Length: 327
Image 1 (cartoon, one colour):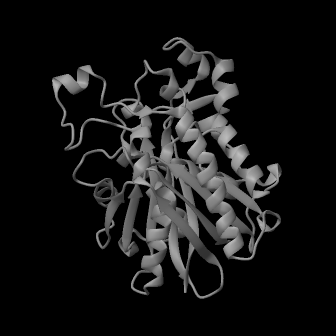
Image 2: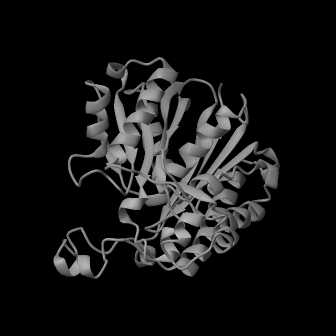
């Protein structure tokens, strides 16, 4: 038994922040941002909108598309590093909002790898035979932890999320394989220093701007290219496939240069690589589910296609997932 994706959805805030808007906030330019990241705009929340609000919109779409009733959902997994609160979990808030009274769930923190890690977790619950309807969501409100005085980070990220319904299939389709990794030695290169138990919130931590995300961009870039490329090649080799066998490569949308380099190292043609970073920026756990939903809406995924997912994020965390699509 495998787990297959039977519905996908996405949601973003209404407000669009362009590169020109950012020119008014920090020392940057439209050309500088586009040339280094490929980003032209990103969506940013307004009026207190939080991760559970975006997630709830995704969840309601998933119920509508899958024709599943809320009380038939067994489990809700939300991958996020920007939960509404430390507790309760974002998953609990989504469960309340959609009235999924029979579901349990939890949040999963794996940064930009959160959605792939969530799919892997959900698929294992499906394969246990105990669960039939699992909702996996990847969402982040990155603007809540962005320092709009730091041009190295504030130009990269955006807000949004997406998700999927996982159900069992007896066919040799669905989630075929995954390879996931973590290396805590990279933790300091991409980090929100304060707000947890190590550095609790204080006037000092706020004044030091330690509640915003900090990044060593060059180090992260180097590890991201190698990590995504190596794990993608590894999963292809493990399953006796090559880049030619892949119908669509959906990588984490961190940076267009990272995506291009990883695809090239895997031998995947440019026309098979889904890139939408120019429109959304890096929504962290939201990038892959948003991209997958767009691909389905644009009829880029067909029955029997091999779909390759790949991610790299803070932690460091990284991984790849191979899906044989079942319509």
